[in-house]
Length: 195
Image 1 (cartoon, helix red, strand yellow):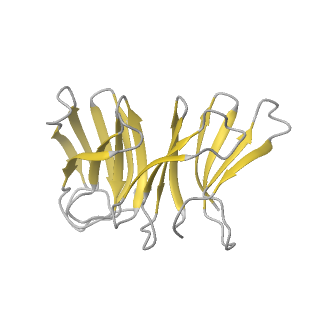
Image 2 (cartoon, helix red, strand yellow):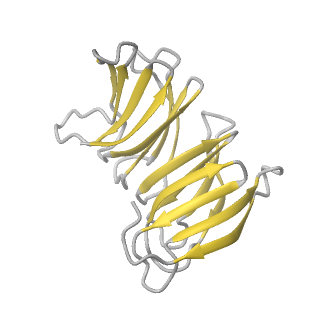
């Protein structure tokens, strides 16, 4: 199963969910010739959880996974040469599913299954030592299902959330990396899964 795809340059990066014992969580496909895509590398992460999302910025790939009892759920991978399985540069433990991510500048924005931290903002300025800069508790207990950062606007969706909102728009201020702020702008409830 392919849970997500991210295209950068001549390559498509796939977050995968394979059931074999030696599974790669990231598969890289060369797409120079769209009629003949070619798998050029596979990356197996520590732990046993399936990959949920992948994003690539420059020569770094960022991968999230389901909750991983034997390893972290956030990975920074060197993709300087996409055709070789690059080194894992840094990791971060959440002990929850990390369902989605979006990257902007020196920060990764993630949607998690943590009932009090559905939004978590990670400082990725040091690839070897990613760290949590800010968390946000969306009303209710529904898992964060998707997240997108666009400029200073952050968009979060969750699974059905009782009478609480499952779609929210926020503003984010990262001008002071040690004091990141998240402010709710608007929220609404949809009686359906927002995937």
